[in-house]
Amino acid sequence: MARKTKQDPDRGDARTRLLEAARDIVRAQGFAATSVDQLCRAAGVTKGAFFHHFASKEALGVAAAEYWSETTGALFAAAPYHDHADPVDRVLGYVDFRRQLIAGELEAFTCLVGTMTQEAYHAHPAIREACAASIFGHAATLEPDIAAAIEARGIRADWTPASLAAHTQAVLQGAFILAKAADDPSVATDSVDHLKRYLTLLFAAPSQGGHHD
Image 1 (cartoon, rainbow, N blue to C red):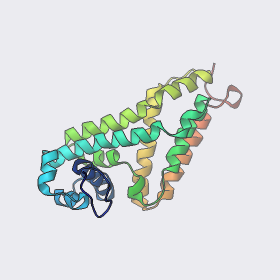
Image 2 (image 1 turned 90 degrees about the vertical axis):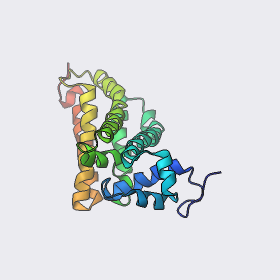
Image 3 (image 1 turned 180 degrees about the vertical axis):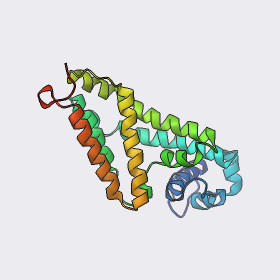
Image 4 (image 1 turned 45 degrees about the vertical axis):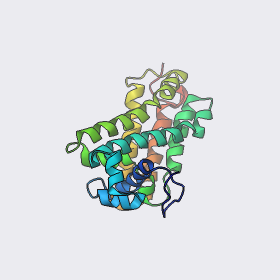
């Protein structure tokens, strides 16, 4: 039976609780400032349990990035934007869905892997690689809809679906950084709104302009 904690008595096993603690604490204060002791307290486990599941704090960081990919991947796979028949509407619907997720405290909606990448890209290559796999792996899920949108609108693109998918993530990650800098979530929503305007213009019908056949 899973050990119960004060925060959530039915939250799962020790490893999962540690990963969830890392998800929440690292987004709030960063990877370097997060200690093993703090993670153990938040997860309601012993230090021995931590090192039973993770050889080091770095190993926890890698696993946290992978857990983030798994849990957010499930969230996006079930999101309603997939239901649109028009691929352009699916692309724009994705942006709308991302905007809806910007709610509450900054640490509640900002990206774990984006946060860790900024700190760990040089000091912890294994974490950087895990974060890159998460960010670019998520971007890749957008590529089929972008490719279909290019075809549906008859666009002769000098860019690729992969490059546009990566650009969406660059805007979103940048929006999170600016929101943290300003301590204001509205800065992030403004950036996402500009991203939607850009994509709307990019996939405009031929009569509305753009680079089309």
